[in-house]
Image 1 (cartoon, rainbow, N blue to C red):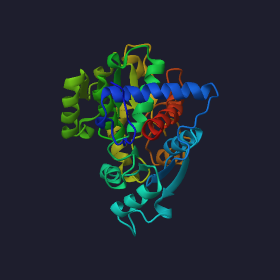
Image 2: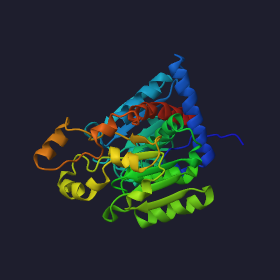
Image 3: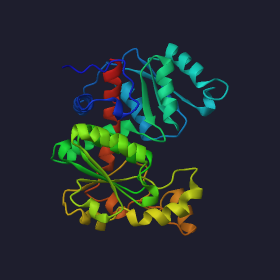
Image 4: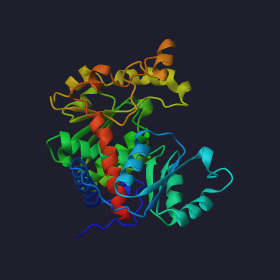
Length: 329
């Protein structure tokens, strides 16, 4: 049966079948190959896409802008300072206005309910560029990267997420692995264990796809991992949480020893970025001066041959372009 995603929103991978996710990945590969060969397209010619940001971004904004432009589309960037969204105008009213002007909307911000309401009221495809509980476009790029670097079917791949296992990346990985029949282990402290309701939801999907979703604080869970993945321990605005996060998460830092503990010489390291892997950022320097080492991965691992983080970052553009083409062309 042919896959038709035209007009669909991209709010969470939980909304898609494994076949639809596979379609996105295959289209991403084609568009990436076209880009490498110097072939350009016009699949988005005449399409106008709104990029609505309540949180700052590097890769997500760049990927949507470059991906849309390369296929002939146009983008408009709006943030809190330059729109009435959520301030002088309700979400519902703004969504209805945006839907009359734009062909699609990307949202990056806080509550998942916001991106869902944008889709509900706008009448056009809406894309989740990150919320507090999900980051589906990142996972699509990560799956593509795994297929490029791990010589296994996705259903045979084991991903271990190290650190704060109740953050949006950990949850997004659970959703992606559950849908694609993969093995996923959340490796972190009990105090930051995944929400029970989330675990129940993904295990329900896993029963249908053959996936395995587990949580553990035992380092043994990394054995035979194909991917070690992590994310920053505290974002901007969360400085007050750093002392406690450093205490809880330092044992789960990704190090060369942790890579070796997998027993798999082919294990790759992945990270959604930005990463604290050295002390060259203002935040890392400031916190180190206060006595806190906020690195979630060592510089040795981050810069090693087993790190594929920049291939992963590039793939954000190819997979986001595929989402736009699949839903708008």
